[in-house]
Image 1 (tube, helix red, strand yellow):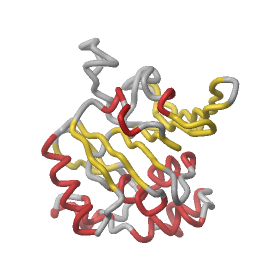
Image 2 (cartoon, rainbow, N blue to C red; image 1 turned 135 degrees about the vertical axis):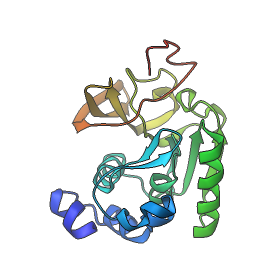
Image 3 (tube, rainbow, N blue to C red; image 1 turned 45 degrees about the vertical axis):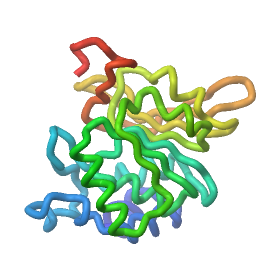
Amino acid sequence: MVARQIAARGIKDHRVLAALAWVPREWFLPPHLAADAYEDTPLPIGNGQTISQPYIVALMTACLSPRRGDRVLEVGTGSGYQTAVLAHLAGEVCTVERLPDLLVEAEARFQRLGLDNVRTRLGDGAVGWPEAAPFHGILVTAAAPSVPVALPDQLVPDGRLVIPIGDLASQELLVIRRTGAGFEERRAGGVRFVPLVSRHAFPDPLWP
């Protein structure tokens, strides 16, 4: 998977490739989908949510570029697969999930993998985790119609926010870096994620 589906598509960061090789993706899927774990495709995990395709996990991780000692916030724990990849690279990962069933399952996987540098919270990730801020990186695993206003201010100087922005029809991955003068952003390509549900940031019932 790592050689044919990730490195072959341009992901060259050897630390990211090693993390993807280390994390057993089948552990993060329902048992009946374990045989499909290393296909480069998103897969359902229940509650209307999905586990992202491995290439997208690698791309977002490479855009975030976490280093040992960094503190990272993940918005949307989901299955916990992206969390485990980040935990292999960063010093500490704080991850927020709004669906209790998914969070309980993810926590069991973290324990099974011996990941003692992951902190979890049940709640609305669009507001971030103010008590644990600031973060060297923030990664959002669901698409938002705009950048939640609370997140960029929880970055350290030179920290990065990686987030899919768009609607149900069209989304693009945005990388925002905090600078001394404010924030700068770049676009990292088209993506497709489930919507970020937030009663605080996006109360409009049309989203989703």
